[in-house]
Image 1 (tube, rainbow, N blue to C red):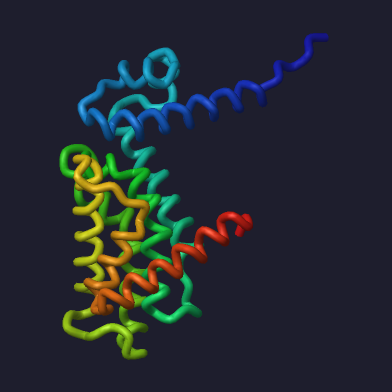
Image 2: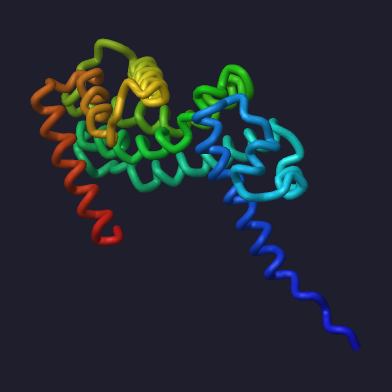
Length: 215
């Protein structure tokens, strides 16, 4: 009697190929938004048929990257939103947790208008905007942030500033581990520069210690 063919190694190989294709796409699209799927397949070390088996076209590949980015944003917020912290520290935590996500997927910003559409990018970023709006509202109640703009409007402005700074990373004009942008966010939210720098430095050190401890 013939034994059934083992499927798990094939599934593992398929998952590995898919992950490699997406990782390659994140890297290569950031350098050349017009790269073809055939060129991506070669860069990922897979044959054209393998790539098209996972992603039948450019739109499917970009949507997979968008969904991956959306899941990563939600995971970063789960780790970075600290409701028990004072609002200025909470904003720093949130900014520092989100920067690696933005840096990883900044190539989506270059593709947003041409391929994904602004609505899809806004959908990906909506959880972050809502989290920051809540932090700003809490900070105003506690007297840590001024109320010169509605919280939701200021949150949208902070988002636009972060996107603009990520685009500067794309051009090579800015290099940052997230701390400079976090300081800029706190200052834009109304925190004095000296305090903003101190808060971000403290939060960055604590975040690094948590990472080193595996937490």
